[in-house]
Length: 186
Image (cartoon, rainbow, N blue to C red; front, side, top):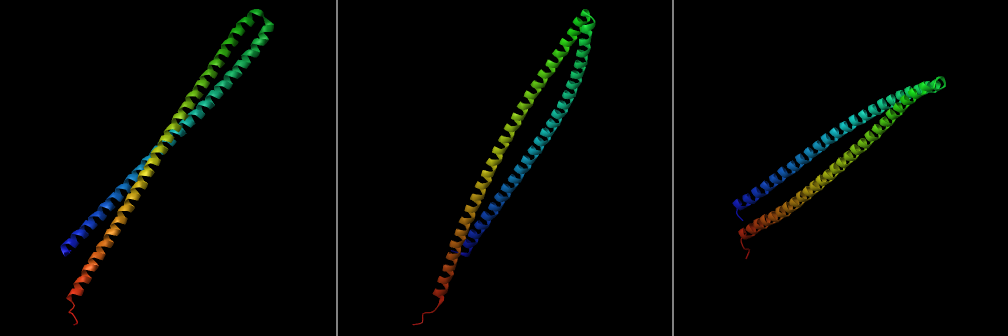
């Protein structure tokens, strides 16, 4: 092997090492980008979840306050109607109609509340599905990164073997040249 051949081999090894470093840098950048995107998605999800929870709590509080107010109002009307029953029969029919309307309003309010709770449950299910999908994607990315690390280790191992063989070849070539330059002692 000539010095030029040796230089070519060394250049080849240097090129391979440079390419390996570039690939490792690309993997690191991809991983950082994926982690950044995952963090951004998690932050958006957390913000949406927080807002939804605040809206739900606010809606529940307002609904409860309206319901309590309507129930107090209905109770007051009912008490007035009961007293009116004793006063006159004609007033009792009028107040009975008002009571029926209040009950219908209460039933409508309960139905609306049940519908809203159903919608909230559906939204929660969708959020859970999205989180599961995100976990699957993160797991897949972990597998890809592990595979990349394995390939990198394999490449390093092959380079180490190649360099060892090359060093032995050079060493043996140099030893052969030295032995051939010695004069025979006969």
